[in-house]
Length: 147
Figure 1: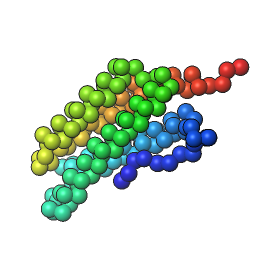
Figure 2: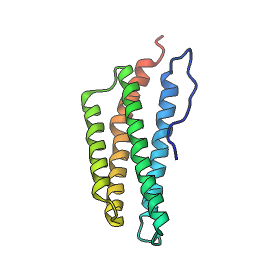
Figure 3: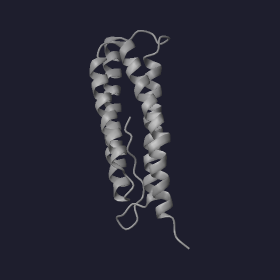
């Protein structure tokens, strides 16, 4: 269920279009994992065995880990292009803190975990199509060849 994927580098340096491709793939994978976990926490999904409950818990932990790695990489690359504002970084840190505390608070409560996943999904979609899209667009415009 890993989120990170390799994309070719040129002379040891990543081009923005390759960075953006990787970041968007990570976004897509994170959204897919969120959707799958929401499905598994849904009211129509049957009760879990102890082994299934453990597997779902592990999937939630991997989701958090993957989200943290994605945020770190995104901040590094956007910062490297001079396109990571302090507000964007603060939004990431606040979201990660809420994600971790929500995960801990919803332990062993399937309905609470579903609410946590819904809140995380809502933040992620809004952030992806808001601050991330703006920052990515800025890097793209700054890295476009000039006539």
